[in-house]
Length: 83
Image 1 (cartoon, rainbow, N blue to C red):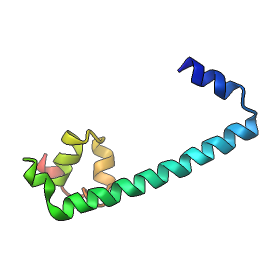
Image 2 (cartoon, one colour; image 1 turned 60 degrees about the vertical axis):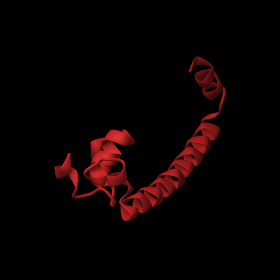
Image 3 (cartoon, rainbow, N blue to C red; image 1 turned 45 degrees about the vertical axis):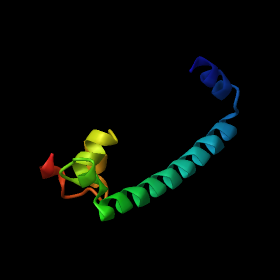
């Protein structure tokens, strides 16, 4: 990580802000794709094939997503009681 920090330290403030904004945009895109995939897994009920009692349990245990994120996620909300 130190080489990564060195690269960041060499950026101007404006370039650092631009790069950060770009990363946030990419992150949103990845999160949107992830939610689409999770929705399809939920619709197909693939979590049952994987021996999980709920989509929430699948997300937390199999995908190791934070519980809070799973509770906030549209496809997992309301299913926290199953874990």
